[in-house]
Length: 499
Image (cartoon, rainbow, N blue to C red; front, side, top):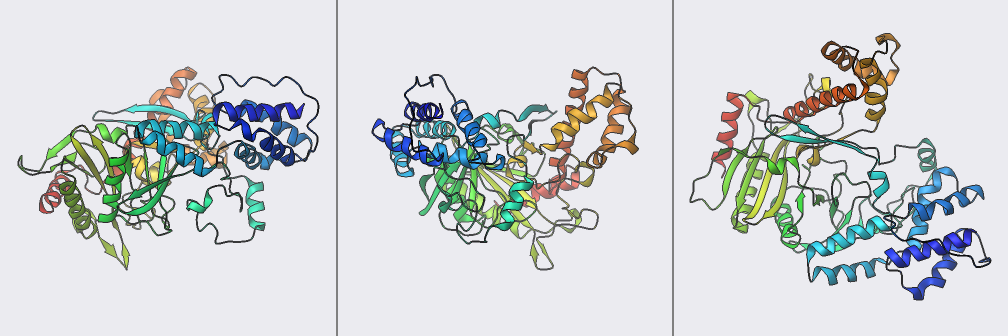
């Protein structure tokens, strides 16, 4: 019977992954090898693959067989699944050829096809992503998107133990280097990874989709050369080059410093996609440029300190953006506790976000500072300690634009543990589990605000509302120019002096 399921997987590859019928026998034999078989068994009707949006249904019986036969262990399911899917997927060169053909007619058609392919070959984990919690947080001046990330696997102790036994290696140099395409060593699973070439400001780059996407068509655009992240004039030109080629995507860079940047600063890369982020809908609070100036310059009505530039003139907007980035890099305001550097450490950086509209280019410059203090050891312009029960990790590019990615632990802690207290369960702080003790202030606040006689639906909504409030406050914490008369005046003065 297992041979029938292998043939069904091949049929799935032909139907959804453009696997040529000419390769049918070859692929079947490779699948037999992976399962330690050398006999195809009697013919049997092959189950239909019609209407499938992903390979889960096809893979399930094969993976179950591999477990039962001792071919794999539980912690090897992900890697073995990727190996199966790689067998029926096109080679990277074929993906590139088809993408280029489609891009010649429409860049959007090309990216839509490529993203669909990456879902169908299971590199983009569609079914896992669908488990994420997501809701809108509506505020007075703007809204946020809140997600609880349930898709990305949590650290597995067995995998961690296995990783400790593996030899250290310099290949690939990091988790996003081009050499990861098809790589499956050192505990990584990149068998089904496929990438696309792109040249940005004369530099060979490539891009791929994130397997556990945070937003629609979440792409990672990567320098082919393994070189550290930097936000400078060259980076700006690359971002603008990308939206010239893919005008239906935005693209942005994390600030290239610890605590305010992404999790991987050793390799130059950017993030983009087709989602309209909350910050994109923010209006101008103050316009600071004259009508005859080639670039419209404004301060956004947004939670952190963001300057928006708008122009149909590519060279002009890049020039103004570069001036502001360089000026911010060296800006100090002791009254507002902004130091460009101290004790040999640089503190100011910027997260630029670029997109195109019918009127031209839009560049949003999110000003960041990573200084710490005795009061705020995790960062003065970071989520303050009273909000760490919800989000302690770095507030990077995506959160700065208004889409919060909250840790999976919150699904249980908030909705399985806290909600019952609002519905009548006795609350005894001394009885809280260790990992719940970070929420004592939140539980007390909710009980004082709502009591303990809510319906489950109302209790869940009350918890969500508190999470919303916290996320709004976290973004305000990251503002280098506070929403005070002194902060607003300093912000305007900085921009006026440097455009």
